[in-house]
Length: 149
Image (cartoon, rainbow, N blue to C red; front, side, top):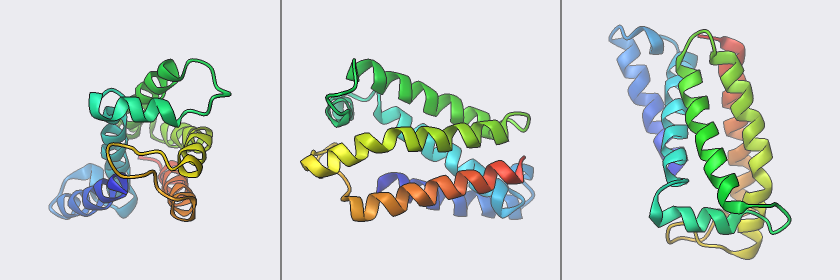
């Protein structure tokens, strides 16, 4: 749930900044683009932080090879996607790529929820909440992708 909190607070803060004349956030979709970038930087950091990295590696289903490398790769992809969201020329491509990444990562979330794995203390988000959250984030990314910079 922490990524959702980061995104919502970021969206409100960016929209307020946009209301004061900051061009990237002068629209709701522009503010959301900034907030999503912040959220993905936040989640990417967890891929490398010692407190959360081991938990994320455990989230990767056993059928996938090299869980550690996959966690590192997805963290890097999240950083690149976040940067791409903030660059007008790559906003749409980054939004669609991050939406695809969320779809690709969903099996790890299912695995973690079904096994009751802990992530930095609390148990993984139950699927009854995780699926709507994932759909919400994908919808946000698709809106940002369709809106462009």
